[in-house]
Image 1 (cartoon, one colour):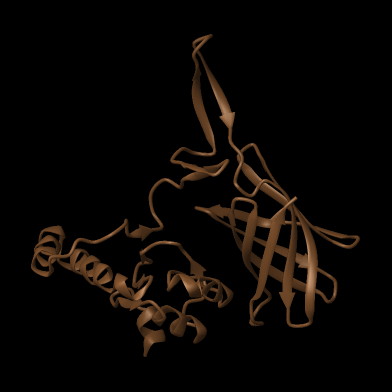
Image 2 (cartoon, rainbow, N blue to C red):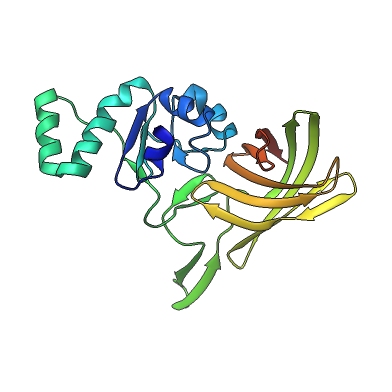
Amino acid sequence: MLKQALERSDTVVATVCGGSLVLAMGGLLEGRLAVTNRLGMDLLGATGAIPVMARVVDDGNLVTGGGVTSGLDVAIHLVERELGPRIAHAVEQLFEFERRGTVWRNTGITPVVYQGAAVSIPNTATVLDGLQGTSVNVTLGSAFDGDWDTTIATPVGKLAVKLHIATVNGIIQGTAAQGEEVSAFIDPELQGNRLRWSLRITKPMRLNLKFEAAVDGNQMIGIAKAGVLPASKLTGKRI
């Protein structure tokens, strides 16, 4: 029933805290943006869902909340979605409760994380050279740029993989090296603070892998997935 509801655009499924994990572990949130209790975010990502660090995440017909106290935030957000902000405000007054944080939606300008600071400008920004009074194009890198020592915890053991990621003319490129085998990233896509890409590998077997990762400073965490096989955890440190 829940699977059918998530496939319909006229039905909204809402869940809070560990409820997101229950749906995700049932295979219902693969590729969906969601949040759960902060203690379960890694597990949420390992199921194939796309974890977003927010109090409330609105992914169309799926609305999820973080910790259990976000339940009222989710409820009032749903009231606003269906009945408008004036009714939602009246409910807040009735409950003597004000929502916290901004509801995360996958819309609007994507912020660029540069040297640890989020700025709401495109990867290529036009700035004014104050001395010359001329317009200069400046290309900013992404938080993923650099060399990384990563480990993939697969069911058959841990694999050490070196990643090289660079932004060239506003486009992310990368390679992955395991031993003597070097593979180029296929269709890398940066969305918010998450990077997705695919790889074709031949060792220890021929596989097409899909990766998704996020960066926090010099730490990388994400998942690697091959078809219907369970996701493997990816961890890494910037070299």
